[in-house]
Image 1 (cartoon, helix red, strand yellow):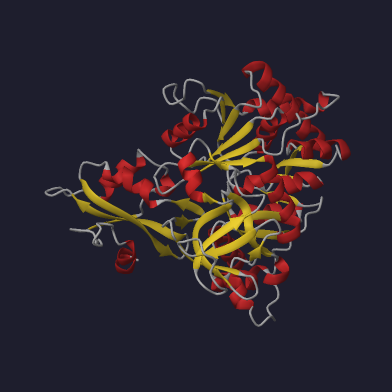
Image 2 (image 1 turned 180 degrees about the vertical axis):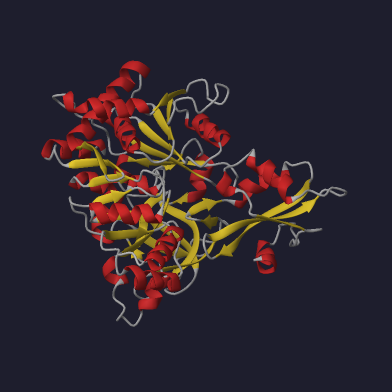
Length: 506
C-alpha cells in the first residue's frame, strides 16, 4: 500500500498524458514523470544507501522537481520530510536533526553550512531530479515501487506547537490515501483534463493535494514565480483551462481584488479550494460575486491533513437556501472518513449548538508525533484527536469555529504560535517580559504584535528587536508591531491575560 503506486499505474495506463508543467510550458508526460522518480530512487539507493528506514527532507520553494523527489522517496519506501522554505535556516536545521534525516534536497545543494547539518545528513541539489526528467524518455521500462504496509510512515510534517518547538506529525500511506479518497466524495470532482496549480507551498497541504490528480492523470503546474501571483495564476488558467488550486483566504482576497480591478475573466479556473483559515462570510460573498461559484472550502490540520470538514461548491452556490449565510460562516460538515465530537474539558460530548473543543476520529488522523510520546498522549485521547479548536455543530451538522484554544495566529494562511516568538524575544537582554498576540488585519487575516515589558533602565526599539528576531526566526513569523508597556495583565496564578491584551491592543 504505497502512494507511489498511483503514479506507477497512471504512467502505465496513459504514458503520453501531459503531467508536469513549469508555467504553461510542458516539462514531462506521465511516463517521464514516473520514470524520473523511479530512476532517482535507484540513485538514492546506490549513491546514498537510502532504504525504507530513512527520511528524506525537502527545503526549497515550489518547483516541478519537488514532485519527482517526493515520489522517488516513496518509490523505495522512504519518508518525505517537507520543510517550509520560509523557515530560517536554523529552524530548518533543527527539523533535520529531530527528524534524523539522511538527506535534504535544496535548490543548489549548498544552502546549509556544514556546521548546520546533522552529522548523519547530507545535502543534495534538486538539479539531479531535473537531470532525471531530461533523461527519462530514453528509458524503456519503469521499475515498480516497493510494496509497503498501510501504516508505513510516508509524510513527516513539522507543525509548530505551544511549547515553542515544532512537532513532527507522522502520517502513514493509509492516512494519505484516506485523505485522497475523501476529496472526490466531499470536496470536488477530479478529471484528467484538469490543471492543478501549485501556488501555495508544496511543503504543506497544497503538496498533499497531488495524489488525486496523479491518480486520474491530470496536469501539475508550478508557476514560474514558484509562488503566488494573481496575474500569473489568471494567465495560466486562461491558457491551460480547467485549473484547480488550493488557496488561503489572503490569496483569494488578492485574486478577487485583481479580478475586480482588471476586469479579469475567471472562466479558466474550475475550482479554488479554500483552506488554511476560515474565511469571513462577507469576504466569501464578495469572492462569489466577483469570481462566481467556483469555490469549495475545507478545514483540516496537519494532524488530519485537509480532512476534517468540507463545503462543496454545490452548497456554496446555493444562495436560495435560507441558511446560506450561516453555512458560509461555517467550515462545513464532516468529511466521509471523519467523526466529529464537541466536548467539554472533561471530554463529555456537548449538545448540538453548544461550544466546546473539537475532537475528530478517522483513518486520516495521524499516527502520533515523532519522538514525542508525551505530546501524542495529550493530543490523541482514546483514538480521538484533540484539535485545540473551539466550535459548535448546528442542527444540520455544519461545524462553526468560534475560538482557538492554543492561541495560534493565522497570518496569510500560515500558523504562527506565540510561544515560539515569545521565547526568542525573552532571550534579548533588554526584554523583561513579553506576550505575543494576533491582531485582526484585513489583508492577512491577522498580524503578529508583541507586547513588551523592557528591563528596567533599558529602552529597546522596534528596529533592535526586529533585527534580533530576524536572526532567529522566519520573516513571516516576526512581529509587525512592538508595543512597550510597564507591566502585563495577569491573573492570580501569574498567567498573562491575553484576552485583555487583545481587547486593549487588537
